[in-house]
Image (cartoon, rainbow, N blue to C red; front, side, top):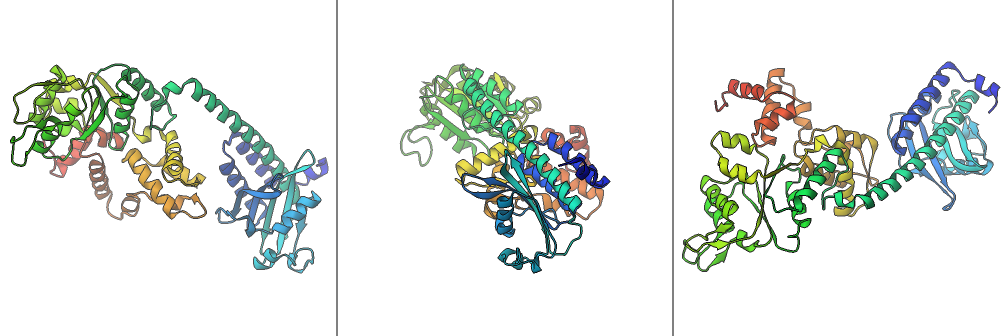
Length: 492
């Protein structure tokens, strides 16, 4: 490209190239990078569609890196464009610029040109060592005089800038992947079994789990619903010296007290109607192993007293029995509530709280480790759904910007639904359906009514936990209490 060609570019084209070069130097991912670039190209050369395709020499065919239309929508099928035109650019290794191709015998014979009623086309090859690296191609259904020689020069500039940036990004991605593999080999002990995450909060969590797993300390796992407290408990067991012994778990929420007590401690024949034979409780069955009590805050006062004896003396008594049995079991408990506050209010035994709180671990909510969202989603698609589905850039942005009150459990539900809805094995922004979007975004009441609706919805999502509700709204607990008092729902 000579000096005269560069001088022929107008101010808008120069400014566009400056913007493009700045974006190229800061971009990190292939797909989102080229989508932004192609939107610029469409605007500058006034085209209707454009495609950035890379030529795979081994397979002797082009592959879409990205393709867009003037409505800023993605195009996923390369056959939407004139494949014969791409082949001609490949063969000649020269740019092409044609108007009124319907009457041009070189192009009117192509079926895609006729079907799409294409009138004008412009395309430039991207060469590396005298070989075709790829092609930038644009077309329109009108006889656009905007497809000028100057725009051909502009497109050539853009294509080479983009190709250089992609070379850099691809090389960087390869190095980063290799680095991750090496780090994984060196720091494999810091990984948590069955828990996905490379964020700083998850790395810190991994260190805590590895440290406490080596001991027999009682662990209290704290965190919102859906964060994976059960996975953390199982990881502690799997990394401990008890890993070859039993691991049992019991959910304590919304279970009648008598039933839960018989499940945990077992019973003697004749202890109650229906007790036709002796039965071991789960605590006894898990002897030498680990026992996980999920949602410990929901157990009754009577059960709290029995559990305290287990923690203090490692002893159990079956219902209807007088014999004391010794058990060697490690206790791990979990809750999404503030046990310390409950104990201060007299709703949970303070001595039991301190017995459980020997080594507290807090599982971070998903909104505090947003960089893990896509890792979790991709892992679920690949390993649980057994599918090859991509998540496009706008869908990624939507997922990462949502506050996820239901945490990982909610994310999995959203991804499972999106995998069903998506076309072309690609999840788009429209496939990501968030449960409360419609209720809140289409709300047409007053600001005060909206405030009340949002507060009630968050309280519901956090099981009436005012501390977590306040944190999610960015307000104080006192603000929540005052609002509830206004509604006549305060306990004060």
